[in-house]
Length: 137
Image (cartoon, rainbow, N blue to C red; front, side, top):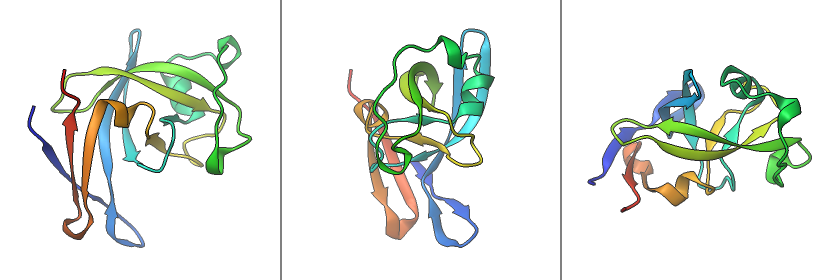
């Protein structure tokens, strides 16, 4: 599949913006749209607490706590699997660390596990753009 080009999303205070993508996340019969930051320095995909609740996850029923590092070190988290659709590509399962922080404090982040295992991402900072290519089947 050929690359798809996205433009950086403008943000107040940042002249170049940031690499955000719109995702459709779904689990069972629930579907929500989120804007996610592609973060090559993030070890894990991160799902804020309130977003997980919207998808129907129950905190007390989770059983697999991943190690969360970096700025989220010490934050309680559980591993969850979510169906994600990033247009124009086919949907796939993404693993997230569902953290005990709300989306007002942490964004949906797409990191090394497993967004960068499923997609190649090429950043063109001087052009305020990036390209995404799905992993070859």
